[in-house]
Length: 132
Image (cartoon, helix red, strand yellow):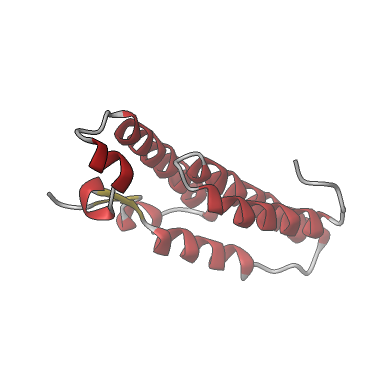
């Protein structure tokens, strides 16, 4: 069985940063749906329940290289004006939403990344509001 990556690298390389983040979000939602569907199927035996799924059995993976590339592009944006900072904060917050969707796909450790991105967005906005 071939491994399917979400998103496809060709999908993320096109468009503006906003469009690329939208593509990441769409791919994260598709990946989450597949992961929740796979995890809801009953296991064949008690040994399978104890062992859990291994990556080879999943057939799908999230393309972390693409999300890292978009995050790097966002972090490289200028912060010279208030408008630039606001735009950058919006993009960082949207990336935090992508991580929220992925966290829902049985990746609870991504909560720390999501919180860090929200904190970064709040700092760019100039506020120190608490993260929910």
